[in-house]
Each structure stands twice: as structure tokens, then as C-alpha cells.
Image 1 (cartoon, rainbow, N blue to C red):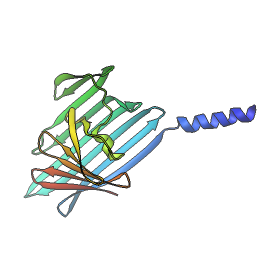
Image 2: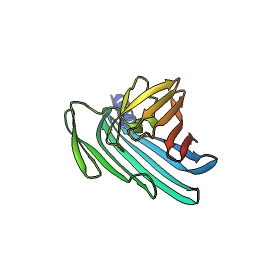
Image 3: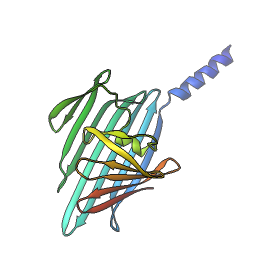
Image 4: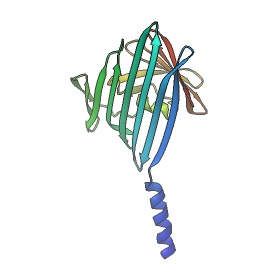
Length: 197
């Protein structure tokens, strides 16, 4: 009896311990290393949290360009319960502050740069941040905390997906063995490539 209790205690402890996964990507513009993307996922039982931080600095045509962003999300049983994001750029890109919160069954409140609205009649199960942790096989749309809206995801080749954005700054996610190895993003100044360490 004591052995059975001990085994159950050990199994319960192992299941309840948080699991943490981290990925770091180096960001390149043309031939220059301009920053990093740091992606972290923590799981605890049915709950998970994800954090994605980007920090880039570049000097292009005698201009200093600095962009920092952060996306955080909380999930329960694979369903988004809360997400926040911000982006600050010293040139060009619009600063963004956005939040989405689950209010009830298939109901969310979203706010982007002070403008509030609701998302009704659907649960949010796939987010852009999830693309950093698993290949989105069969997924056609993902929710972007940064845009506070759903974006189209299109498979364009084996292990390669195009994320279509409303401002024509599409990104391409490339996977090998189900793991994200590279992100290519269109910008007004050219393509930015992020490669996994």
C-alpha cells in the first residue's frame, strides 16, 4: 500500500511540474546580424503560457532603426484565454498595444490601440505565437495578438507556410522535422530572415 502511494505521489509530481521550452532565433537583414527573437513556452497541467520577444537594431542608409516587440498568451486546454502584445519602433512601423481576453464561451473582448470590439461565435485555438513551437499542419487561419485579428495561413510547399497580413508584410515559416528553423518577413526595406540557433 505504501509503495502504491509513493508511486502515485511521484507520478503526480512529475505531471504537475512545469515543462519549459525555449528557442532563440538570430535576426538578419542582408548580411548583418541585427537582433534576436526569444520564444518561451511553459506548460503546467492543462494550462500553458507563451512569450515571444523581439529586439532588433539596424543602421540602414544612415538611419538607425530600432524595433522591439513582445507577445504573451495564456491558454487552457489549447484555448486562448488572454493575449497581450506591443510593438515599438523608432521609424516606419506603427506602434501597437493590443489585448484580447476570453469573456465567455466563444466570446472575446479585443482592444487594439484603444479601439475595442468583440469576437463572437468561435474559440481561439491557433495563434501566430504557436508557429514558433509546432508545425501548423492542416491549419488555415491563426489569430494574431499583434493585429488583434485572424490571419490566413497558407501552405506553400513541404514544411513551408505563408502568413498573409493585411498590411502586405507577409512572413514565411519553414519547418524541418516539425521544428521551426527559419522565418522570413517582408518589410518596406527588404526581407528580414530569422534563423534558429
